[in-house]
Length: 617
Image (cartoon, rainbow, N blue to C red; front, side, top):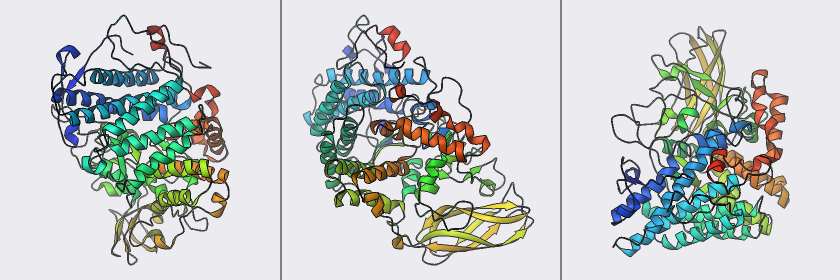
């Protein structure tokens, strides 16, 4: 926590993106502030602002602390000291700044709470602001307690630079305070529904209830193992489900296209971190780097540059069901999440038509995380480093899977638990879409004269469908294979496949469709045969659904599976990955018992003499 008190004032605003797009204009003391309703709104924006900070969801929280599990890794041999390969020490800059900025958000919240009654204003509006700030403070403590364990619990603003030594509170006490604050927030935000707010960047009643369910889920797991809390998970997820405000977006990929295009779907995306702008001109923009570090590699600004630094593991790719008898380098998967999450192409430097410059990426140990794709951004010009893509904190599918998990722990494999998980799977398998999707494009004549480095563009036309995409692979001048990268939707007849290229001709291919309505997406009897089998199925389902969304590491910890699952992933790499990918076993090779908690930052221990270090550090 910082010893010098500063208060960030951001011009108050209303609406969706306006909530975050104003410029920080002033630094002022609390004594001369908080005089009007507008001042309270402005202070509230300052509390929200921490979510998008570079060391929180703006960049490093994902790319150092959350990457490095059985689902993802950072490309390249990671240097000594890297968090994502468990080589870090207490002096690590990323964990130091995560701690620092989360406590900065808590200090901002404490300042606002301490002065909430100062201005004369509408009492309903005052309660609404208080509800949001209580929730945000408790959410920041939730981040701290799940990563660091016992932490200083500070509920009053700092009043003196000489009073900063605060001992760590037992994590049970921290969790109790989180629950208390979130329940108060639930009361104050009773009328602030998702439908009423209309966008995911502001805390709503559903967000409070859904995150509170997540808090209880962590309390039920390791290290507290307060299993009675599973009943609370059921209660709070049912509140969200029974509200009637939420449902799954029929298209899994559309969730992430919406994030790229500043579109809101509060039925699915209950709470998200807002990013906005492209840093052109002099206006303040709250931008992040989710699409420039993950997403398919691209070296052209018109597409949207991405380093493609976050890769998915082969274990993740193999976690999705595949049709073993199907043809092609990548076997067909009826689970449409696979080919959106594990992207099968990269972009090079664009030529006359960037679509001609996609290169197939079919090695399952070297695929980019594909959820955030800059090619779908609509705000131009595109910045080479920063993007406006939002980041999900709570989706409705998480509500359903949390409910199924808790229901299983309390009551066993009930029909209600199966319905919840199978609804998520139905969406994944395309059963909420209308019409058929592409299953395969078979090359019947490879043609001649094609160039491997610039394969022909695959054109999919007719058939009544939309959004289908594919990429050709060329060898020895011939089209040897066509990889489907988006299965599309709504086909009522088989589309025509043709090829467009600057050189080469004669290739012919034939498409095959599948109607997802006829595909069985439900868990098998094997996966529902027992409580243990169902628990294992949920653990796999969460991996398939939330890969890259900052949930996996903490899920593994609460299940008591961090070392086990990372070492399984490492063995898979050693046994099956090509030689140039063997290094990606780093995380599994380095992880140890102490890694269930991050170390308390050395910098903070030098400032706060009452802090003690976590075991093993």
